Length: 293
Image (cartoon, rainbow, N blue to C red; front, side, top):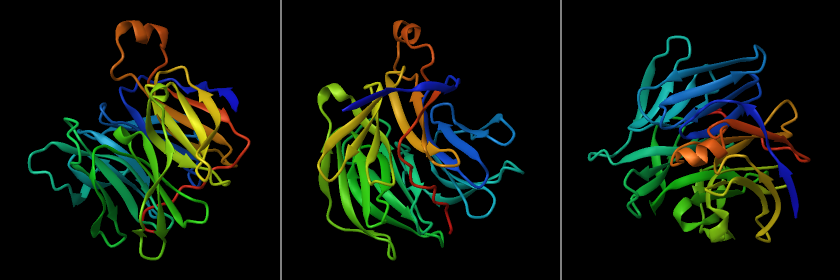
């Protein structure tokens, strides 16, 4: 198995950096700090980092086909206008007790958003994976989850992969691109205790999965057909949260991390925890899908 080391790319002190995505058309890298309530972006053309505080926890950001970004906040899914800085709620999270929030989310190749929730007090089987259709309607895709997390599709768009973090597994589902529906799921990857917890995830052109290890200090690449781990990326931060492919050729991997849960000793040992790291890869990643295409 191959081993490589990630290097520091963007030095920030995110409490819970997450949700990276690369907009190739704008040459812009987005990510979020969930507990910092902040959407971040790096504009490669301007070589400039910007941020905006959303006023509540933010789980994900997905660029739209038209101008603007879709963001998953604690209480719903919103459209955010970068020019006016205004938020327009398009989905209200069904959460009368206020114990849930949106977590990871991405657009599928048809332009719908798949977005999951988690329970803020870690209660089992209270979370859901939703599909936001292009017309603004929503459907429940997976229920009785605990912490809906990483999600991605195969290069031929016929398979969907999903992580419910406490299960320490990756499940694969047949995916119907036309209808956006899932078939029966099966476990294809199992984490060991020493690996930490599977968090965010992306896929490459070979159909392999790249998975962030929270409390594991790494990203790993897996063959989902065999369940074999083929590469490990060591990251100088214990809580690795997610990853995505970036750059003109989609042959670099950007990696987000968190400072949450680290004591003073750990922060002294890993001073760049909460930053964004990256590596050059030997494979190309899958392109970003936008909401509404």
